[in-house]
Amino acid sequence: MASQGYVVVVPSRRGMPGFGTKWNEAVSKDWGGQVIQDYLDAIDNVSKEKYVDTSRRAAVGASFGGFSIFALAGKHEGRFKSFIAHDGVFDFRSMYGTTDEMWFENWEKGGPYWDKNKAVAQRSFSQSPSNFVQNWNTPIMIVQGGKDYRVPIEQGQQAFQAAQLKGIKSKLVFFPDENHWVLKPQNAQVWQREFFSWLKETL
Image 1 (cartoon, helix red, strand yellow):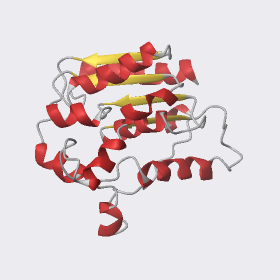
Image 2: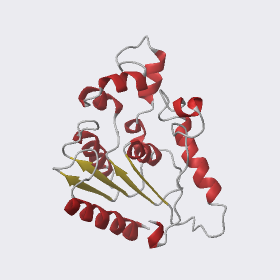
Image 3: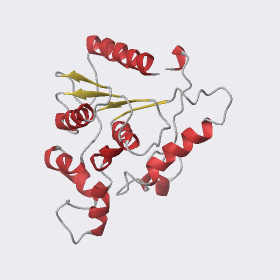
């Protein structure tokens, strides 16, 4: 991205290593809370620099970053002009019912969504990006692997369909033979082409 002239901001938000265990664990059971504010604070701070064109900002991310894009789409309040989400979690309930890693889901969310007696779980599931689609209004490209069993295909499909039904400029790039990452050389070339074409088209 930098080689093509973009200013790249990579915030060390909560959940990232480097600032101690407490900082690293602060994202658990609060995916849609303070960590999302960390992203917004980062873009607000860097946008004060004279070399930043605040009319042409985009947010991109993969895995937890993909989830972050879906969350930001409902909470960014006009900061971004374009989004790219790669293999991200869109809907916490369907994710809970389809992922291959239940221990992680139970730990991160604090329990199942149907347990009304677990306040932590209820708070976690209330932060699902799918709960904020009414605020979506920004072009978004969604990348999804057909063999991703950690973040199954329906996550990308649901997000894309929501954007389409809302009339938002959107694109789904689907790799049926890839998992959570794009590993095949030919697919990687397609990924790179689609990624930068989308930014050029929407920014």
